[in-house]
Amino acid sequence: SHIQLRSRSSSFAELVDACQLSEVPLASTPCQVARLQVVRPVAWIHVPKCGTAFGNALMYLPGMCPFLPPGYLLDGQQHEPAFVGHKTDLWCPGSFSYEGRRDFGDHYGVGGVYKSSVEGHGFIMLRQPEQRIISAYNFYQHSWPKWLFHRPAKDLLEYAHVVSGCAVKMFTRKGRNGCCVDYDPAVCGSPEPATTVEVTLAKQRLRSGFVFVGITDEWDLSICLLHAIFGGSCLATDFEVVRLG
Image 1 (spheres, one colour):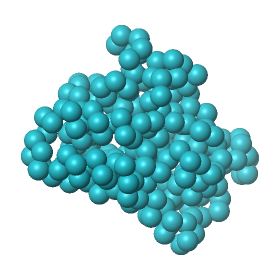
Image 2: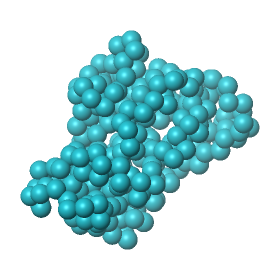
Image 3: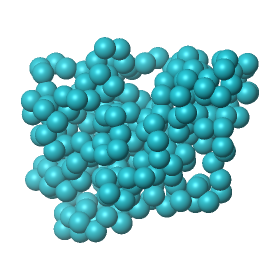
């Protein structure tokens, strides 16, 4: 029933120390509220096929979205970040950061805004890479660069060679990322493989700039950890699958 957290964000780390995070019961609400205030505005880095539902968990953390319509949920269709991004500041004032991006849950690269809006504010769910690629391939070949090939990927292997390293590219490069058989250049769909330098930088940024890292393969535990650190009760909607696969 104890949790440990490492962060190089000075204000957040100081608060963790002050609250003695590894020794405080999980119901320490004042510290949970204070932690969330320190890391706002939250920068959700949404790697494709790593859990749109995580957006629901974030929006329903205490105080994040006081003006959210009752019962509102991202559902992967008409109610998703792409279509409600312009309302985020109205529903969730001061809670989400999406500098240089389209909306708070898009798949843009944050290499150009990491220092200004992600470091010390980053939240992310990560997934076993091969499973993420298979899921993205089955979801209309998410991020495939049709602008370059002028056709869909011939098979999963060709697709994997191009879109592998998506999270590394998002951490270290700037630019947009589209969805399905994309006609425009995108970060994850870049045919340029992630370099060893980018991998090293991505690891550094993940360790030092992210205050929450969850694992989709351990979704339930990750969501419980989110609430243990930042407060609020687990909701049934935290565990609903928004998009199969």
